[in-house]
Length: 164
Image (cartoon, rainbow, N blue to C red):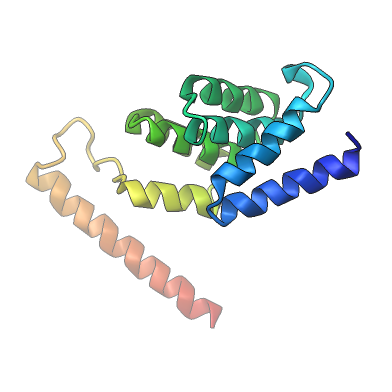
């Protein structure tokens, strides 16, 4: 398969994923990966990540999908979208704890990645309590948490004023 044709297939698959057409994207990526005449370890990491994601959510082979996504991250750990793919796979099998870990690992790579931030916000993940050695519901943690939130809100408001 020619390199240009491979890129075209991959780009088309990404468009389909963004459009919510995962089954069609899965078929394209399956064709792309199956036609690469090398071992799985020589396939580009981005192909592995998206193919792994779709192998889980469309093909329902979650274990294989997770393996492929992890292999992509081992090859190239610096792509935030690889963490999004893996985290969404964990969510698909109702493993919220692992999904949270993966999303935060991705945010350590890129704190501004919109997809990772969107996933974390969707999950409603809360910040650490001010004093982690005291229960979250303790009035001290609750009060100081509100103060922290208010200060963050004021700081963000001030940043917006400076941008104008």
